Image 1 (cartoon, helix red, strand yellow):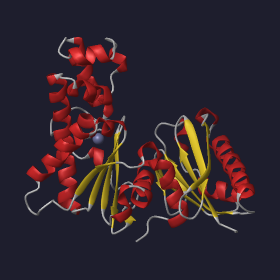
Image 2 (spheres, rainbow, N blue to C red; image 1 turned 30 degrees about the vertical axis):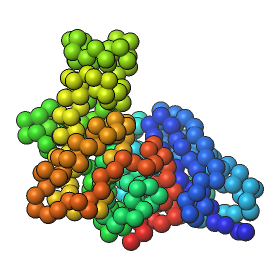
Image 3 (cartoon, helix red, strand yellow; image 1 turned 180 degrees about the vertical axis):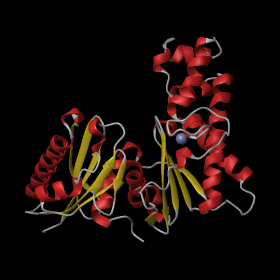
Image 4 (cartoon, rainbow, N blue to C red; image 1 turned 45 degrees about the horizontal axis):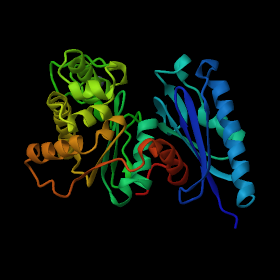
Length: 327
Ligand SMILES: [Zn+2]
């Protein structure tokens, strides 16, 4: 057997996860290391190249002498997809402006290298190896500290000229809502992100309105997460339940807007907020049914991510194997 190997890298602000996989996307070996982003892009790219080379060597000796066929990398910001150049990573020192990352890594590893924004990469992962395997048109909501997103149309990611299409968390939901990191007011991110949801949990706990939540986190507001809130709601905290349903309604409005525009087969909810499970999903599904009146939405599946936090890494592997999609 002389199987071709593909590498995927999930570059984050604090850690780098890399894997080598076969052409079906099955991971052969995987490793994680600290990003040490303060050392700057050159040192970080050096570390990525070393990590991937050692994984390729490990995979090669365990199955057959192989070379890497391609590498895909999910990046925490804007990238020039066509040229493989990083444009703006807001949370990394120097912000990686105009770093020819694909060329540098390709020179070190001797294979083509493709870059993509991390949430679009996770969308590709879910489309190729997760819930989206049978879907043609799909929207992905990454509900974490922020709300990111991605869109695939007819089996391919839709990226737009800057690779930024599909920023589903920055659609306006409340015209006079809270200020958002992007400068707008009332974005979905300000209403349904992890911090937005837990902030209300903290308020309820501190005002004595959430006894079950208080019990669950031992009175420590710092331990409140969306998942703990869902547990408290299920245990009988009515106020916590109401606050979750309010956020879920906002999310449902965001999903309904996307459904009207795309009429997708599938909407996937990922990230820590999606770990709240049915209390969130049921309300989102109900909101979409209630608010989309122009066509039947029975055929639109709304599901939790199948890959969870692995979506980014699997997406980077999909990017290496298939480019921007199977369509
Ligand atoms: Zn915004």
